[in-house]
Length: 392
Image (cartoon, rainbow, N blue to C red; front, side, top):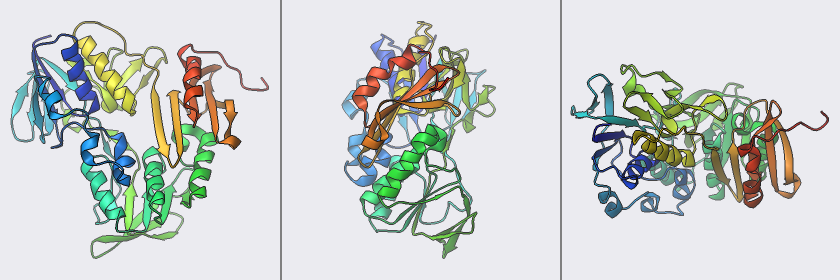
């Protein structure tokens, strides 16, 4: 490794990589490039504490200016990487500058998927701090809200909007909220949670078009011909890895930057965070994880491997989601087709842990308001515990 590490992406994964490099003794040149003008900040609070107004924006900062200065890194904010020449080892920025590197870390995260018509006034996506503040301002005007997409982001926004006593409709082509992420058993509980708080659910149907008047959205027409009057629309239909700037780089770009088990994409090039697709040696599959803790853990692992430790990155993935007074947490993976069994507590009591088993082996555990019990049962995933569904 030459003494010039450039990290593209100044959020959780990029910052974690930079800090871990310094903590492990790297004293060479370090550059951190971010496309937003803000100091590095945390994203999970955007759909909860920032949107609700419980936090001021400054509280999302991952580090203050003093701590960032202590990194001894060149911090280039408000500038975007637009191309990579891996042969010449140079990155082209949107201001025309070309930045050389000895080692490159790609930590550019993801970008929201778009829908036709989402350019209209009143239609929002939620990825950045500025997105969250703009949506917060709109919600304070007490609009009728339609949220397109009932994944984690859409469900969290729906919870905040209902706590603000707004009229909220949640739309998704799948049969249940969080169906793809959590399956039907827990998805049905999420549906009940939102219905019980007054959210209108339009499931099993998609968006046909946004209806506009004078350039502003006024309604959403669904594929089942339902018309939903709306003053504010939130498009939360997932995201795609931010790899457009790497299109001509020669890197393998599948579902993200494809890496080996050490998070290495090519000689001198690593990836970390939401954009990284790597081979997980314990689960025996390629994975890309869009969860907050993974960003930090993978950044730390990348720093170690840059410095020659050669350790496979093999975490037990973890995520959480806060909706109303309910916290959903999980360790491991929750794949489609898994057998789901409650192993502690009861859904009727609003507190339980469920195990997700695939091919006779526990690969994930999910807790519903059960933090302590879930942490105890994490071992089922870490130990690759054998499991047979009831009746077999």
